[in-house]
Length: 70
Image (cartoon, rainbow, N blue to C red; front, side):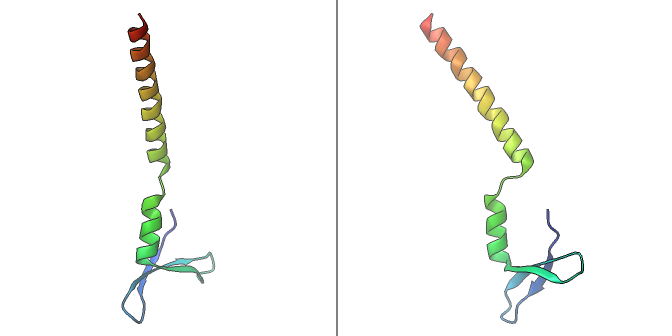
């Protein structure tokens, strides 16, 4: 995760600023925009958990289908 510095604009809006290795500002976003994008993204742990749930659900569905056929 990128480390962000919290700043405030002249209008009082909360800002996130990302700095490069030299310490210069690389990217500045409003908190609202940055937070929304963060919530839309999934972490590696969330993706792995979703895959695991999907596999177990698929196996359970196959087992139920086999029982119905017998």
